[in-house]
Amino acid sequence: MRKALITGITGQDGAYLAQLLLGKGYEVHGVVRRSSHAEVSSHRLRWLGIENDVKLIDGNLNDLSCLMRIMQTIKPDEVYNLGAQSFVHSSWQQPLLTAQVTAVGVTNVLEAVRIEAPTARFYQASSSEMFGLIQETIQSETTPFYPRSPYAVAKLYGHWITVNYRESFGMHASSGILFNHESPLRGKEFVTRKVTDAAARIKLGLQDELPMGNIDAKRDWGHAKDYVKAMWMMLQQDKPDDYVVATGRTTTVRDMIRIAFDHIGLNPADFVRIDASLFRPAEVEVLQGNPEKAKAKLGWEAKITLEEMIAEMVDADLARLRRSEDIDPSKMR
Ligand code: NDP
Ligand code: GDR
Image 1 (cartoon, rainbow, N blue to C red):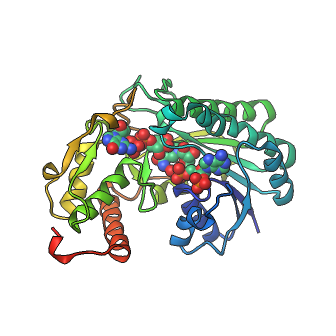
Image 2: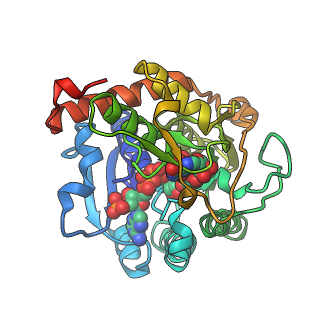
């Protein structure tokens, strides 16, 4: 039985990746940060019904000694480094923490693998945010990087240290440059889930307006379920490499909001309010990826459309709210 170790298993991608790997017969281990309310951190694994199928182990990306002990104990065949301070907006408020976890944390995991599990294959969760201020209209593996946030700067470090360990030590280390991907398990701080949750609340009479930042920003949005397949595919290749994973289609935040509100038969203009405090000190205005290499070499392609995904997210939020909130039928829209 092959063994996989996932950092960030309690996050959106970690949960879907664990589900994928369990389905393929892997023994799945996950690193979790200790918290005073462990049941909250495992809520995504519970939502997928896999919380009893994965083996969770306490650890932190900033503690090299614990990562070494974890590698020594588990001796994984594959290591997926998905753990990060992943919210771009927070990275201006917590730039040093972001650097420690999202940048230096990658070296900690690489060192632990190199020393204690040297034959393991390694995946690094790189990001389209590294492209930042756009140098080419459509971004591919050869597009120059220009990070625009402390988060993106940290990810760039993580990306290059992965390339460096591959070239220095011959490690099977691959980096997936993933564009935005979402799902009903997305954190509510990210824009798609903020919008689908608000649309559902407005429909049920639980919220009256939707404060938004820069709705002219454009993103290339795919579904997390599709994207975790690409991570696994990268580690099944004979040679490690770097791949852009994207849909190839870009959409404004404004149009994504319209798709969500159309789904519940409401007009976003009646509820959206622009709030200057939600704008970022430096913005990534537009991202659009070229997934040709992933298609040609991995045989990977995005399957779920933005419309299908947003509809799934709105429906999941409606169902969640109906279960947990006291709904007054007379206030429903
Ligand atoms: P999430 O924010 O949902 O998950 C992040 C995970 O990292 C959580 O499990 C979190 O644990 C864990 N974590 C945070 N800090 C530490 C730490 N110090 N030690 C150990 N674990 C830690 O992110 P996603 O699932 O969306 O993304 C997965 C990865 O992919 C991230 O690295 C992200 O930056 C990257 N990425 C994501 C994209 C996307 O669109 N989703 C696109 C490109 C890259 P806890 O539950 O305790 O908070
Ligand atoms: P992003 O995702 O920064 O691209 O990073 P996010 O959903 O936070 O923002 C996308 C775009 O929407 C604009 N926006 C708003 N964003 C949020 N969160 N809230 C708002 O109210 C709002 N209004 C407008 C933002 O300015 C931005 O342009 C995500 C994360 O998952 C990263 O970890 C990952 O690396 C990248 O995607 C690829």
